[in-house]
Amino acid sequence: MSQMPQQAAPAKCPSCAEPLESGDLFCGACGYDLSAVPAAPPDHPTLTMGAAGVGSSGVDWPPPEPESSGTPAAPHLPTDLPGTDSGGKPLPAAPHGSPASPPPHGSPVSPASGVRFDRPPEPDEYPLQAPDPRVAASAAETTELPKVCVACRAGRVDDDGYCENCGHAQPRERDHMEQEAGPVAAVSDRGLRHHRNEDAFAVGHTALPDGTPVSLAVVCDGVSSATRPDEASMAASRAAIEALLAALEQGTHPQQALHDAIVTASQAVNALAEEPPSAREHTPHQNAPACTIVASIVASGLLVVGWVGDSRVYWVPVDRGAPAARLTEDDSWAAQMVAAGLMSEAEAYADERAHAITGWLGADAYEVEPHTASFKPDRPGVVVVCTDGLWNYAETAEEMSEIVPADAAVRPLHAARVLVGHALDGGGHDNVTVALLPFPEPPQGAGSA
Image (cartoon, rainbow, N blue to C red):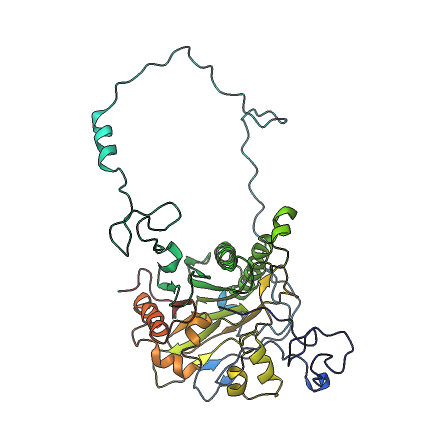
């Protein structure tokens, strides 16, 4: 899971992370020369192949689209735009849906109390029916048996989830989660070192107005130093997937839909911080709930990614003779140091501050700037969407390609289980979550074996 959020330079010293004042040339705590820190890098995904045309990978990644402020006359289809990188440029305006349907009429309701007054008069007496013996017998058969402890196999489990005999905590619903949605699959596990799973995911499968199938996945990683990180990741993933499904079904361009969905997820996490003043009196020093987010959409030959934080998306071609690629760039201290030329990648990620994030969703985030990018691969493959609980054990695109099963595109759920198992075998130091999307979208009805 992600570490304590850190403000991007120059809000804090890159060396000791102490707060800075505007105009400081040296850090007052450690004396670090702030003039040596270049500006933050522009928003663009880290790719191992050429950004335009056919690069060394042999994959045709389209060039960025020229900036345009015009509003399209009709909803975009995924193939209408070439691959783009957000880079701070405005995205095409989303088509507006029809206004919400008016509330039903014809039911007298008191405007003051909201109580209905159109109910028919009630009879003085109601006829009683003899009980059905079949119902009573069925109820007796379905009486829920008390839960038995998974550790001692003898004690009963109380309402708090602990064994009354040996006191062992029972597995919780979020300790291990699996889900399939059409050709998309995801698996999340608590790992071996944490007491709860602070990751969350959401997967979906729908169609554009013209019938084109769409696959999507959202993965969120709770910020461990914040309060209620598990609630933050769950709220963000649910809000994002609902927004994406609604927008795509209306014909919104996937990149626009993903940008807006991340903003919606951010608002959902912000709402968790709206506690009554009495609650804050007991925990005045807690950070607001926070999490990272990464998502991907596959539709009509277009691969769209979006993120805030340090969870990642990898592209792994079916033909392992072609290079894999990482399609996202971390919002983290390590990535910032590498981009600024102050450290090599090996040095930066070996530093204890490597996973301090510079972008996240939460009420205390400096500014949420969703990164989005779209690509048009010219060959089949699988999209890996994951938290750092997995990529810590397969950081480079080449390493990720080596551990993704060869049949991942046709058996995504099995492949997701294999990847989670790889992280657990490596030590399972963090929560592990991974979602897999085959590219291109397989025929309707295809799924995991």
